[in-house]
Image (cartoon, rainbow over all chains, first blue to last red; front, side, top):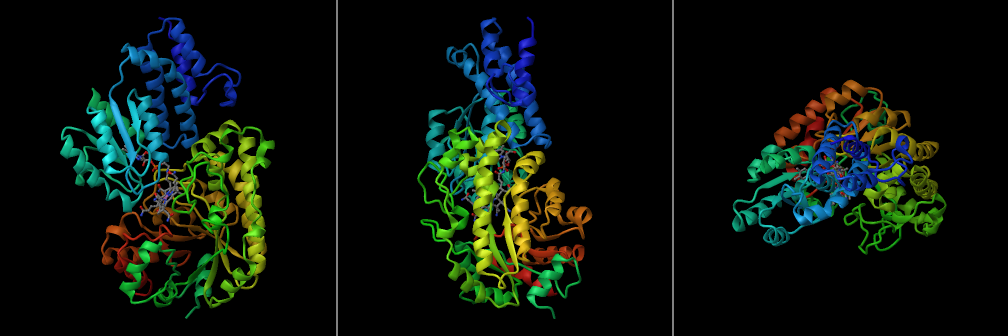
Length: 223
Length: 345
Ligand code: B12
């Protein structure tokens, strides 16, 4: 199969080109975006799995890498994520029918007491762009909310974000509660004041300094 | 011995000081009781006196309910909340979320600061402070952060790239508001104010949140106006930005700021040796005592050691202060004491 459209979608996601109407990036003005190109690719009979893996996931991986190296910043990453979502919307029916499978479910939230959400949101977008279903519980998430949601998605992996020293100490309470109801559930934590040592000390299974590390850890679980 | 103000000014000028200048910061209400009982005082003023602190921060009396805080001057958020500095999240959907035409900027009901700043109260507050202190107006004038909340932060960051004219139209309006507000405040406090604290958070732990080019074209022009205005009143300018901001420190120097605050020591490239090597003597700093690990989990001895290390690196040019002005309740008061003890021993 010709892979030209896949490469084009990859490029759109990498540079944040959402659709034809979007003026960004200036160099791609007037050209179709990931929205139109994904639709076209499906119409032309491209395998949705190939679109997901070779265009969207591969491109978001590159985006995450560039972000991690401070080559791009939050605005660029948000537009890449938007472009990815526009493409992903066309894949929805294939997820529902089972023709395309997600790698798993990721429940994520900012721990109670904490209102910082920009990092958590970027993580959500990257994890979605890596082929996972994401259930985002928002900010100031109480322990009970994590547990309730885990009951709805018993196989999910849980991610907890904290940006304050005064709220990272709330993480152990959430992890203890998770272990009580579901000992096998894997938990990853992250946020500015956290470290791998802290993660270990509170019994988390993983730590991610940035979304890229989070995704790599999740992908190891899924493989 | 130098007065607080002499020490402060000499530090900004990178001239010799008798001991490093200091700033306690702004302990949050939940942290105050612990500090009061540890030090046996009953007010922040008494605590500052006891610690021989150099900077006296002055809040702007701004009567705009419910927050009554100039950092919450714009009701952009579409959701209902108290809009206090503690509850505002910047990411909530904002008034300009769905506007694309820069001409629509006037659809928002822009507040007139003259209606809410109490000039007499501002003057009285400033006059009440011993003139030997470095009296610092806490202006914030966070035009970038307000522009973020004007759209909702994520939307705002995308608008910066997709529709820079729209972002610029909004941020320029916000800057105009602060220029007017600050003019009123500077006039009212003329002769009784030495410095101002302004700024925005540009950094996260690992790097800038926004690319330097976008900051340079859309944000720093406003910063420049705010800095120039303060300087025209003879005020020193301390510029605040949390996080890792190494790549824009030269820009801030160029913009004319006198000191850069709060030097988040654990953020990427923000440790004192790195800053000293790159910018020593070119500007001054305020902050640097890590509040993400050391002040929270360290022992008083470790805090003292760190302050000694900072003194050695910066015999002047650094106002020693926690790496976030908001002292949170998890910082043991004994560590605050250690920080101040180490300034003189
Ligand atoms: C923006 C910001 C705010 C905004 C938040 C806007 C929002 N809706 O999120 C506002 C102004 C509201 C705010 C408020 C406060 N803040 Co604040 N804030 C920041 C700042 C400058 C940047 C955070 C950010 O958004 N970065 C951008 C994103 C993309 O990065 P990130 O969040 O770090 O996330 C990345 C990684 O950590 C990772 N990640 C994050 N979560 C997770 C989770 C998992 C599972 C994984 C794998 C990865 C991961 O991925 C992200 C992308 O790389 C930081 C500075 C810093 N060093 O981080 C201070 C900072 C976090 N804040 C601080 C403070 C003190 C406060 C306040 C208490 C101040 C006050 N008194 O009002 C309040 C607290 C409010 C509350 N209850 O939560 C301090 C905390 C110090 C401490 N002791 O821990 C910091 C560190 C600043 C400093 N100088 O010390 N803040």
